[in-house]
Image (cartoon, rainbow, N blue to C red; front, side, top):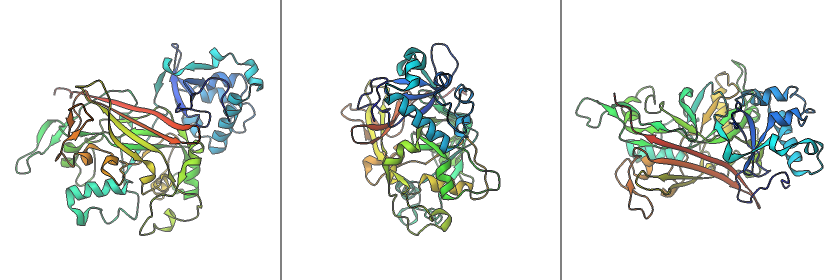
Length: 424
């Protein structure tokens, strides 16, 4: 299948096989739902006016749905509608004789990607962060508890997670200030207050929930698959020193709540379907509610990279090369476990994977691991610049893609800059 409506480079993140959804504004108009194709964005509200989605059952008022400055209403409609919209868009983009193509003024239904402002894809009611990478959990455990006690006893039995702060989730390109808080650099002395000195990135992906479930009605693995709308890149920034002092006994708080950055384009699970792979062997086998009934593999082969642009330099330098396929707990297992208590998930809820580290040092997904808790310098290419953690005015960029035959399913960029702490 080839897009004939606008040119698309084979190296583009957004070919016709992808068609991620996002929220954008352009030309002084209000924010609305769009789909990325090559270097352009399709205006779904404008295409609705031309009748492109008129025959889709369950999407009777498509113009109203796609005129909203968030995807929640569309997410709530479920996979049959998502799939039908994607199919109509592919037919529109690939068929010169499509009846809507005959009516469509390209300048009215399409805008260049370079001319739009991207917004958060959804109104995020709730945000949960998991801890689903065995390699990352092991590395952190070795640092702080030793090799013999690296993983806590529950880790291989359930997807560990905590409830994060939805209000400070920001879209790519939004700068964040270094957080202030309590830390205890000397265990023999009282804590001190001030800016974090061990600020870190966390390479993550995150999924948005679709229709969700009613309060008291847990999801099965099968239902969880159908409830995941799509996936974004995520940097769940972490103030390691603030977190280390505060997290016992209730877990992360100020060390995490100052900001979480997500990429603006939500890649659907249908676009990722060709890239399913087996997830790592789970030993011991999970309990039946987390393991039974599905023949399709739970992992996805998504290559991920993290680059840093230090404030002393104008170039980006590679920090991490990892892959979502390393993640021990699958997305569907995370969502199933989240709901198994009867917790009601809602359209637009965001769930992060936790840091995605791989088996080799170059695949570690945080500065904490790369510098081994600050014990060694991380050398940034041939620049002569080193880091243990992130300095003020440094920029972190996360990218990811799946490689197909002659095309790639990309996620765009997840970019954030750390500004100096506010003086208190």
